[in-house]
Structures are given as C-alpha cells and as structure tokens.
Amino acid sequence: MSAPEIVSPIATSADAHAAIAVTGLVVAYEHRTVLDHVQFSLPQGAMSAIVGPNGAGKSTLLKAILGLIKIERGSLSVFGKPFCPKASGVAYVPQRSSVDWDFPATVLDVVIMGRYGQMPWWRWPGANERRMALDALARVGLFDLAQRRISDLSGGQQQRVFLARALVQEARLYLLDEPFSGVDAASEAVMVGLLQEICQSGATVVAVHHDLSTVKRYFSHLLLLNRAVLACGPVHDTFTTAALQQAYGAYLLNVNEVP
Amino acid sequence: MSQTATLIGIDGAFHEIALALRYDFLQQALAGTMLMGIACGLMGALLLLRRMALFGDAIGHAVLPGVMVGYLLGGKQFAWIFAGALLAGMVAASAVFWIPQASRIRPDAAMGAVFTGMFGLGIVLLSRYQSGSGGVSGLLFGHALGIGPSEVAWAFGNLLVVLLLLGVAWKPLKLMSFDPIQAEVTGAPTRALTHLLMLVLTATIVVSLPMVGAVLVAALLILPAAAASLVARHFGTLLLLAGIGGGVASLVGLWVSHAWGLASGASIVLSASALFVLMGCVRGARRHKASVRHG
Image (cartoon, rainbow over all chains, first blue to last red; front, side):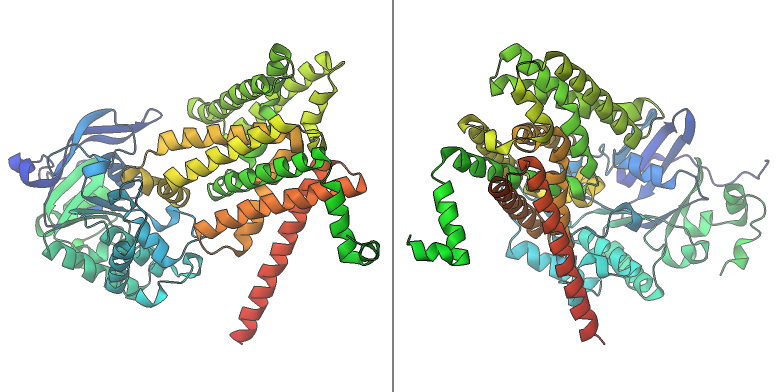
C-alpha cells in the first residue's frame, strides 16, 4: 500500500515532559510481531486516544507500558522513568470483561480496593479509605449504589465503578482500555466529563478508544496505531483522512463524513 | 445424666455424645477433622474465587507418589510422608503451570495429564509395597477415626499457617482473587503469593489425607466454599462461612460415620454436600422472597 506521507511518527525531544515516552518498542507473541518499532510520546495534562483497527496492538501497548508483558526490544518510560508499580502514580482501568463480576463484593468494596496499593500490608482500610471511596462514587454518580453487589450492576455502572477505583488512587496518569465499549450513553457522558475534569486538574488521561465518531469531541491528542505508529500528535493535525485510511484501509472514506 | 433423660430424644443424643467423648480416639478424630475442615474451607474459597477449584483435586491425586516415597523412606513417621507429599505437590503444581507456557497444551489438559499420571505412579507404588502396611490404603479414602495425636497436631499447625497467610496477605489475596492485573499493576507480590498459596494448599491437602483421603479431599475444598458462595455478599463473609462450613461438615460427617459405622471420609464429604444443598435452598428462598417483594 502506498499511502501518502503523513505526520512523522518519530517523537521529538519533548520526551522529558512526556507522560509516556516509547522508543523502538517491539513486542511479539510466538513469533508474530504485534508491535513493530513503536515510537511516540504523549504529553502531560492531555487527553489522548489510542486508536486503531482490531489487532492493531492497542491493549498490548498498554500492557507493555504497565510492565505486564515481556518486550523484545525498546524502552518505555512513564514521567521520564521506567514504570514501577510501587511508585508509579498510574491508575489502570482495564476492560470491564477482564474480571469476574460475580465476585462477592459490594460497589464500595471494589472502590476501596483501589487504595490497597497505597497502604502498607499491615493496615486495614478505615474511615479515611471509606470516605475517599464514597467521594469517588459520588463523582461517578454511583453514591446511592455503594452497598449494591457488583453482580447486580449494568455494564455502564461496572465501568464507572472501575473509574471510581482509579480515582481513589489519586494518580497522575490514567490509562484506560476501551472505557466506553458496551457502555450506555449516560455512563459515557459522565465518564467523559470526569476524564476532562481530571485533565484540567493537571493529570494525564490515555484511553484506548474505538469510536472514531467521538475522537475529535473527546480527545486533544491522538496516537494512531496499527502495529506501528501511523500518526501521533494533536487531534487536529493527526485525525486526517489519509492517516485513517492508512490505519484502517482505503475503504474508510473521509474524516469529514465522520461527525 | 439420669436414666429417664436418655429416653427423651435430644437428651439421649447428648448422653451418647458425652459417653463417646470418653474415648480418646473419638476426641482426636473430632478435633483433627474440624481443624482440617476449617483449613480446607478457607483454602477452597481462595481457589474457587480464582476459578481453580479443581486444582485441589489435581494436587490431592498428585501427592500420592510423594506420600508413598515418604512412607517407604521414613517408616510411619508423618513428617516424612508430609515432606514427600509436599514435594510431589509442588512438582505437580509447577508442571501444571509450566506445561501450558512451554507448549500448546491447554491448562485443563495439562492438569488432567499431570495428576492422573502421578496418581497412577502412586497407585503402582501402593500396590507394590502395600503388603503389611494397611495404613497407607487409608490415604485414598481416609480413615478419620484412626488418626492419632500427631495427625491432630499437624492439622492444628496447618490451620495456623493458613490463618497466618490470610492475616498477613488479606488485601493482596482479595485483590488478586478479583482482579489479578490490578494487583500486579499496583505492586502486589502476585507471583510470590501464588507460589505461597500453592504451598499452603498442598500442605492442607497432605494433612487432610489421613482423614478424607486423596480421592475425596477435593470435595472438602470445593463444597464448603461453593456453599458459602451461594449466600455470601463479601469476600470476608465467603471465607468465614467456608471455614465454618468446612469445620461443621467435618464434625457432623465424622459423628454420623461413628454412630452408624460408615466410612468416615465419605461421610464427611456427604455432609459437606448436604451443606451445599442447604445453602442452595437458602439462596432459593431468598430469591423467592425478593421477587415477591418486588412484585
């Protein structure tokens, strides 16, 4: 395929101020290369989308950043340092389907679990953790459901519980894996508003995102990925027909047709 | 206790119990099975939440060759049997984890292959060396009424270890059970804890062998936990109920076995099954009530 040259995928020297900086990243599963020399950086305080077709390696990229999978080559840094779970300032919101919602716990239990990483092993969650969790639940609009069993929640409510669990971690970087997939419109609106609030307060949001129609409205920055980086930068520079065609194939017609 | 009281049903039963408790062997058996039942219930709950319920079954079978080797090397000393079984259990657990990573074999197939193979080895050793060592055949189905003070002490020590593990690692164990990736991302020592969990599980199974046996121990791991999961709303309640359920089922089963002369291991398992059915009914009734309330 001979697509026209687009925005350079190579990250510039702004890496020192980047929330996430990745250089020369190669990840392979059983000889199949999933991420091929991926190189980019995403700025602090921005709300960035990672977009690309199925199998583009978006979730794999998040997992690589979090040190959950083995990388073949390359380097990754979060706020200028390699990711370290103990002092990361990173909150991860996984795909809803990654856990068993029949687990015996209430909504409040799950959100309090978000504090575990910040607590020494001998301390039990107390009034402080409880208050933080209830605050977070109020922010995602689930305060009234705090004592509900998590198995009784709708998909959108489950996703909001996960967001509340991330909020109590008081992170500087929020990594979300398809936070809006299978989520009702009301939940999506609440979550987008909250994520934008988070960015305004100085933290960074990076989300794997599926819905091309909302990229421009929700996000300030874009990382267009299909095993390699096809574009990275502010949405108005990178969300172009040419770039999207390169990522998704020529049948995707025109960005302007995307509302 | 008066003669007339024994004629009245419930007093009669208490009288029987009081009489029976004079026999040391029964006290030992009751204490041992209860301690074992609590430990099995707790460990089973942790397995159940991680969708590894049948892993206990696999380890139960896989420790048999270790038991035999320990038995042959160390005579009747339980410490030798314990060490051999622990080793075999860890070998089996490692193989079950390693095979799927090193090949295209799925975890369930790896588990089936490892535990049947090792069980076969155990049976071969058993059939070769069984003559004159009747105590070992009890390891297949258990003989709770035949245990001595040392088995009780081992069961007690094991329960302490289980409680210690839960006390120290409650938060990461809970988080790992619900969301292992979150546990890892937030810095919980997931790998070390998984190994520790396997080690304590194997120990729990090994101290259970004299009482319920290699074939039946899985039931005591799964049933109290499954019963508790039908009614528990919190992680803590689930563990509490599973522990109590395991202890009570063991006591009741052993008592029934003693009173009616039935196989002790199987009676314990049956009473755990009864507990499961009972909790199913409780849940059903609760649901029914809720649906009536909501119209």
